[in-house]
Length: 468
Image (cartoon, rainbow, N blue to C red; front, side):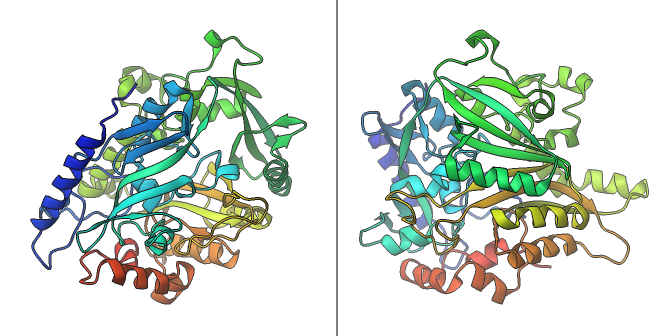
């Protein structure tokens, strides 16, 4: 079990954060002093002082009886789960990569296979302390003095401040998860299957606790239906699958209809191979995998490798010498209404051409009956509407006459045309007018002015839209 740091250590860490803020010269940008990130945007590599968040990486307290946790903003989900799972509890949504932080998932966006019933991670936040641009720490909740900040904070990516403490709900879980992989040979049938599972929360009479999917080709797609299980129904505990070593999870989806994992291994099933992106580093080659230390089969290791490539461009130079075409990075997660997702996937097959892609249904969380979901202005999804997150991560060739960014711009335009949104953790190309309309920049600007009157924090558009 991960160590719980306690309140005294937390207060000391916040004091260190305040001191680091005071040390930043007036007029200098305010940023986090951290070396790692799960973002896919160019990061400022200047050596100016930043906010010291080194003491904000832990779990403060767990209330087992009331199923809540007090968590520091820089705590990773890996560390949080290590602290809660021994109590039979997990966050309502656990993003699929171990080193995503609580603060990152709230000020950005997170999603996983429980999102069809639990929404996004920020929807299970009960209260949070936010370090704002004017150097104050304010406590925001849904109904208090700082409710407007609470609502605007998700998807603000640090433009409104940084969460130092977050109180979240937890849910009880058993020790095991059983899986069933359902194949669909038609994209319209796939979309209908998603709609049925989300609406009924079952499939053919069996309860569904979590669901996601993979499209390998237009005529080969799968929904993975997960059921929380006290004891695996079809295998004994010793025979549960392990995808943290030689076995590769996404390949198992095509190879077997039924599977069983421990709850811990289910939560991190995608992390070992960063979905399927580890193949870019040769990590799925059996010979390479045997030599690759198991402790380094992790998404954060691959992310650091990508960061080095972005910084030094070694592969890019080698490809150029070999006469290979330049590549455009297309790393995106988009939300499309379920009744348009088949249209998007058909367009994507010819317009982008990556395979496979990840699917994850989502609905805003309803806490008081149908249609009771709260809305979040900086990422305005419609209540009582099923969306499907489509995730695709890789590169495509830049064709003669095309420019870097053309494919990403086409994705943005198509998603907007279909009534969807896209996450902002990666490159964005929106013009200011479109961005302002999609992400309610007027409200965001008004909230920012209230808590950052001297404009110390970088604005959302300036932070996330890629300039050339």
